[in-house]
Image 1 (spheres, rainbow, N blue to C red):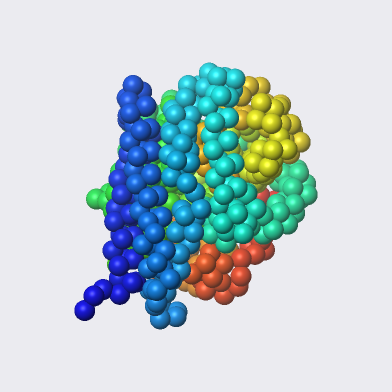
Image 2 (cartoon, rainbow, N blue to C red):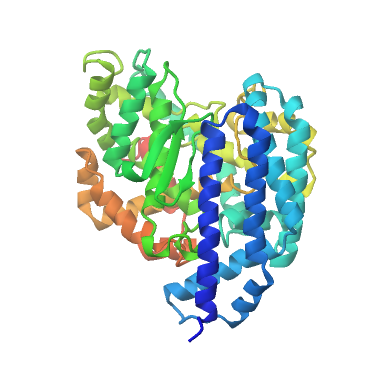
Length: 501
């Protein structure tokens, strides 16, 4: 008996998934250890494989099979078929030559960004970034036309399926209105507390790395299926069963690298927890970046900056860096004050929980304006600096601390930034539901046992992959649709003195 249309599609998409695994490793290597002289060759290789994936997705036979394929409603097979159709629609709308041009432009711009960022030289990056933006606009227009979406929504749908500007704008307008007052209230409360005393360095990188690996393992990261490395910008990448995370080290500040490791481990736990039976297939992939960011921010912000976590890790930190509980800054009280300090700063990835959304709001407003053409790329530095001044009251001194700090736009990731704050909102809701469902979760964190928390996330989030929408997964896990209620309560309780932590 010949295979069914659905089975043929499954075999075809599995092959595409394996090529994307190879792309994941090539991309990781490019960002971590590729020699600079290989940049053009690597860009060509990545572009070629990207076009191959595109050609396989847009093969006319795929469209014919999708018309004939069937699967029982409510099953994983039905969800897989839905995700196949979605992937095909995204790919079929874009000419292969645009896929290749976009990939090549992003690869070259990303490599050039490393030097431009180091030098704070936006002018040097402008021609390459202009090419990326132009290709991105073209992609947005053709995808939007095929999907019945605005250009920006078409980009957003690549990272967060089903999310639209109409979902984001009301939430972000509320945050824009309330953030300045919330930041001021948090800082006023902070002023009533004892002064913050931070641990004195230096903190040798080798010891920071060993500590990071120890914390990764405690959180549940499977070292037999992943690794930790160094890059300019921390990220989680790699492939199925080969999940690779990175951080960056500063011998004057161990917390930045440590929190980077915890954040990326949250991403990695999601990837390592996806259902093995559906590896390489669309339904077996993570649902979207808002849910992905919820997993990293749940670990970094919700858990690793909580008092129970700090009580557990404080002795490990003293052991790692040869300090004692009487050394200034090394007590659990002092460390907790340090990790919950509210202080507007220039760097998004180092921002505290309350000021972080301001960084996202600025980038969201800028990238939507750049895509629709209402902001010229040459005016980006000034517009970026104005946004930071308006929301955080800071004067950005140079482009290295301003619009050049993030890898997203040079690498072609337009439409990604809003998922960070959407993820923070979901993280608070998921954390509250987990704590309410199982008292062992909070008890475990206090003694460094994260297995109950990870088990809850495995059951309710990771194992669901793309079987449901983001809203569907959150509603099934928490009993209510996505809401800002838990997030807003969390910020006020932790930072404004209205709650227990």
